[in-house]
Length: 221
Image (cartoon, rainbow, N blue to C red; front, side, top):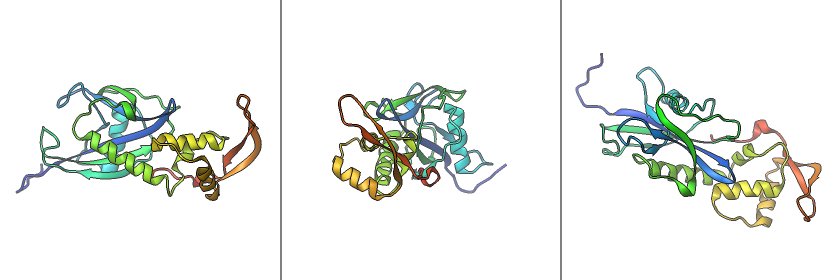
């Protein structure tokens, strides 16, 4: 039993999971099963137990509400506005990740009514201050594209430069100059030609590339 002289806040975690699905940048959301905001869509997350770390709480809540496990999560930001949760004084630590989701089986567990992917440009009304968290997470993700190779983890074993550029454009939600992108990505020296080509329609064959060393590809970190 804990006794304190002063009131103290509760701590939660919220998790923003990005992925590219159907050529769109999408987010994993859950439909809340309990009040407050019962029936509203929200980020996966929940309260930190007294005997676990914040990182472990984030991983546990993600698994409990969506079935997603073994995802590296990066701490994004701490949100602590006094009235952000109608139940009580709650401070939340937000996490985010960019993952290849094709082989994930997402399903709501006992802590959520539903779990599903939503395109960034068609998000439903969200509970709490989760829209602010998503905006911050996307800004951080976009910034990381300038100095990391996080987008490479979403590519198949062999790919064209056009396909890689499309991934960057989907994450950025903006078009990129083709010539400048190719010059920049080749200068990274993270990919190499495979010697094979891909023909689509009547266009000239495009060179296929591969990542030199997948172990050196950045994840969210």
